[in-house]
Length: 103
Image 1 (spheres, rainbow, N blue to C red):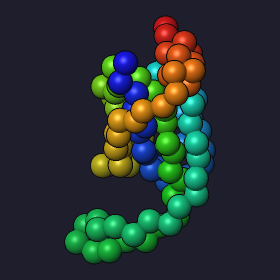
Image 2 (cartoon, rainbow, N blue to C red):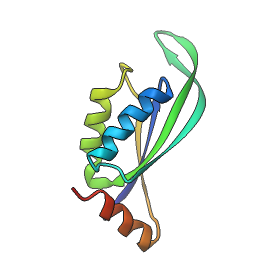
Image 3 (cartoon, rainbow, N blue to C red):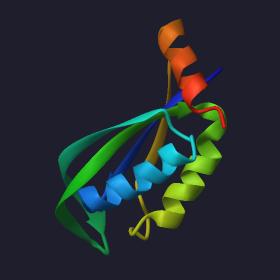
């Protein structure tokens, strides 16, 4: 089974919690970690700076498309940052992820 971490940024904690709770309720992710961040990025031809919330979401690779679709649907940003990376872990942790994300 391929495992993924999905990095997503949000405008605030309320939005991050709302989207993450929907993903958890639908068993698309096993867990989420929230971090406050300061972002600098290009938008509308100038450099923007903002305080945001970032999450690291843990999931099965097979759920990537459903996760991406739900985040895009619920997210307030026109172009949300949604990045996927594959990872390896222990057999016990992998089994837990599979168990809690099985619908």
